[in-house]
Length: 239
Image 1 (cartoon, rainbow, N blue to C red):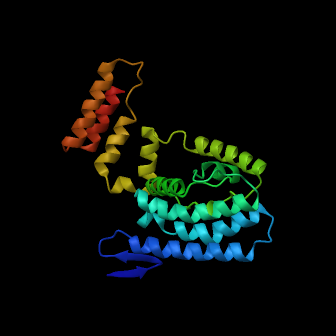
Image 2 (image 1 turned 30 degrees about the vertical axis):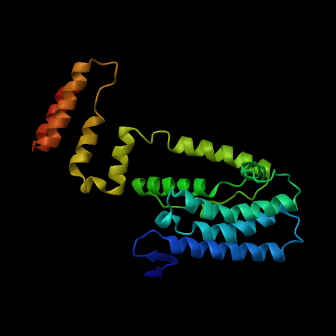
């Protein structure tokens, strides 16, 4: 038994095999239509934009729900993109040895692997969920169809902005700020207090004894019902 909700086909085992078949069939139909009607095109960006909008979008819609690391599923989905890559290689006279992989063609046309994009989409969703930001999927921020020079420049700028924005992503202070901004401090009171205390730990250059003393306060805060006023007084004494 199966049913479709918001474009996703669910079955009783939640294995999404029928959904994979449905989106693959739709993607192949759309790709066939593009190849038949646009054979006179000579613009690479036009082909890529049509493929991204009408074919790859079908293969990535709501992938956070049904995506898996199943090799067979990856091969089924990759068959659609490989068909498009064969067409591009033929259209633009790019030689590819028979029965070889498509990595060289992917690199030449600046197209990502589908499973790589799904993995990055999952990571982006988890990151934005934790930090309370607005989630934007790969399809919403697609700019791969630009010229090579513009793509390289945008990629460098994007990498710089990402590193600059998230350079303190793993620090205790950043975690404390996230708890405060997203309201998690009202849900995980002990965790918020523990992070608050941990942010007051001395630097490594100071004696280990002081660090150990503050860690004991941290443990006591998690295991006992010490009052907030008394806890703050102890922290002041240890500062």
